[in-house]
Amino acid sequence: MTSSRLEQMQVNLTLAYVINNAASNRFGHQIPHPTVRQVREIIVDRLNGSKKTQNNRFEIVWGPAIVPDPNGFAANVTAVLYLAGTNEYSVVTSGTDFQSGLDLLGDFSYSSLEPFSAYVPNCPSDARISAGTNGALFHVLEKADSSETKLADFLRTLPPSSVINVIGHSLGGALASAIVLYLKNQSGLQTHTYHCQTFAGPTAGNAAFADYFNEQMRGNAVRIFNLRDIVPMAWNTDSILNVKTVYSDADIPTPVDMKLKVDAVSFATKPLNYTQWGTSDPSGPVTPVMQYQLDGKVNRDIGKTDNDDSKFQAQVGYQHIFEYMTCLDMALTDIDIPGPGAGDAN
Image (cartoon, rainbow, N blue to C red):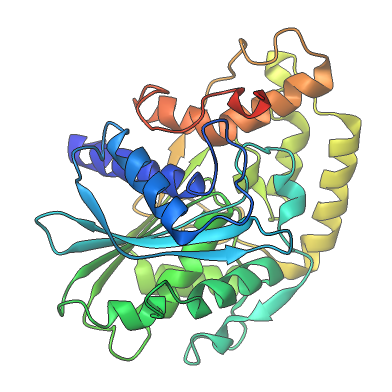
């Protein structure tokens, strides 16, 4: 990997993690009923506290737009960040509570698909996205920021031929792949150049959606995933079965209840044909320019004194977040987020 490509991945991972933590305190606990001002201040502080984004390299130019859940916590945070001295803007959208590794298999509605043509009318009629992606996409696109401006309307105000990077981690990664296609096909936005970089994302939709994404974004998108992370294994009916043996070589068995859940998900998704973009088919060869595989290592210092189930859960959370930093030659302190185990603090 070239140094410039690695640098870009490190910067984008930082942006994704900062936005994921934009409505959380220093212990990783979600803030109830967060205000725009609170979230903005957290984003600025965390950007300036992170190695790759410090010294005000990035400015918030739209947002943060906060989509609340029924309990008043932030279900999603999206912001547009401007890289000083360039024509580049990053649309960054958050994922799930990324301290909750095992919950990720239950956080996303995957059992049904919705037509993507609701957002991009000229896409293939059989291109479909998961109900979870669909619901999140609707809210992100419709949510205005404090100036009462929606995301697409703000991007229409940018200079022609701006570079728009769309970035997300985890469920935010799946969402980013749908957002970029929506923006790329909107009136008034088609003069911009679009890039998409996702980390740890589950599949956003079916094979027809993946093929459409490949066609639209080839050469301008990279999906980054850790082989030890269970989240990118979802929701493809075959790849998700790898969860059952993901840490077996390190003598960390997958809990029985997780194996049963995996079997249920695999059975439910078989007729839906979930497919990651960047591949020709679920078992086909990787397209090098669109996927970047990280060979994560099991961290044996995580959950050392716990029982097997707790060891598995701790490893899942670590691999889904912190091993991405390690694999991309970053120290765990390079991004200003709570470290491993911080979510357990009082």
